[in-house]
Length: 208
Image 1 (spheres, rainbow, N blue to C red):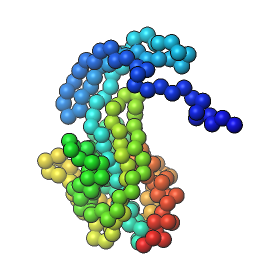
Image 2: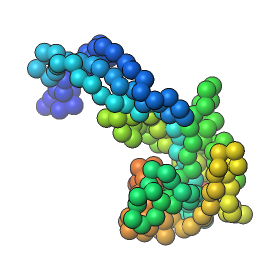
Image 3: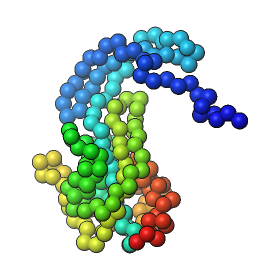
Image 4: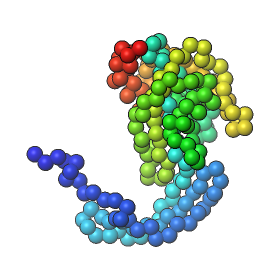
């Protein structure tokens, strides 16, 4: 029987023409207006179309886990994109940060774990690399699970120069899982990371 994945049309960068790119805004992030046309599934070419695209650096997320204590380390901070959230614009999330020039995702993961949570990572496990919103944003996220000893972690961290005010929470996995099921962990990094950890934590705990 044919694999259904193999029967799907395969397109690549040669099947799209970027006709024009106009920078609409340039700051910490950029906004571009891109005119393009692309190959259609019937083999023809589409008409030219305009799309606005949020251009930003790639990001890294780290779900920090202590297998010896079956505990996770999460950070809480205000998020400008969630100011209209009726529950709260403060979000509970995995550690995360943007990739600087010349850095690898693993280097970013260890740097951000220390800056945001005062946490040294003993082992990094890469989970996924994904686009959070490919219809409108260039960003790709590399998501890790970072193994650590959570004893002594907590308090408020972050860089003054970046106006960060970050509260560190250490909680049992079961409590964090219940929060996720209740809709209190409502970001993609947390959802993806926790579903991976739910499947793998028994093996991680057995190895300590």
